[in-house]
Image (cartoon, rainbow, N blue to C red; front, top):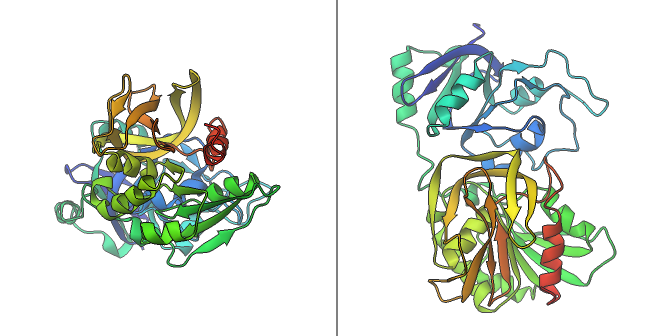
Length: 373
């Protein structure tokens, strides 16, 4: 069987490389990740559902993979693109190679292409694409048409596809703080409830389809909405359930997709970014403290809210301020409600993978639940 693989973009551009991982065909939105490490956490992040991820760092797979760093029960990316895969992994925690993990889970990838050139193309706007190898190889014109027939990310409702179907509880691993959080799984990463448990919180993780009434019936001290894939404009059901929580003034914290849903619940719009923020090296300013944080991101949509001064929630939830902004492009990276106990950020404070600069946000959530904001 030929080792050749093709990456085909919907604009007709084709990259020829070598098959990496499983052989076959896969379609998805082609996006790039600027992290130099953390590939195992990236692959198992449910927010990447239906996306083909391009790694801008040239060497991937050097430390292999292990049984501790997965952020969910499987790889979620639709496909994987690397320039120079490691020939032999070397790390004391490694149990197998990245290539073997991809092949075991049927993830079609490609290696040996110029990922810098590809990233320059995607910086003009991410697009649909496909990876084809093995028996899936066909004339390029035919493959381009297959890619063009693929689904768009705009308008896609994907949270239900990646969420758990039954609730589960993460017990406190630190001294119990006497607080119970209901975390709605829209594509949650495993480390997020673990970070809460470390701070003494009992966390009940519930499916994305859980209603506001069911959440409130658990008598939570706080409610959390997680990261996740898809277009927030297609998640009106979740927005409606979140409004029930806000109406009861239960302390709320959201990250990533949860930030976008809070924005929509407050009455603001959301929009698709040209190429999004994906990586563990994104600079964000916390306007409350003036501190600049290096943060982990994975989002292609953003909240459209006034960046200067306080604004009034179009949906009637009082005053709102943009609490965090991205220093690369001034995108809204956080919201804080001034008249109800709710806030959110667009990035990932759980540091899996990524820096720990934003871990204070979990403490801020505890302060909010204690009424100490």
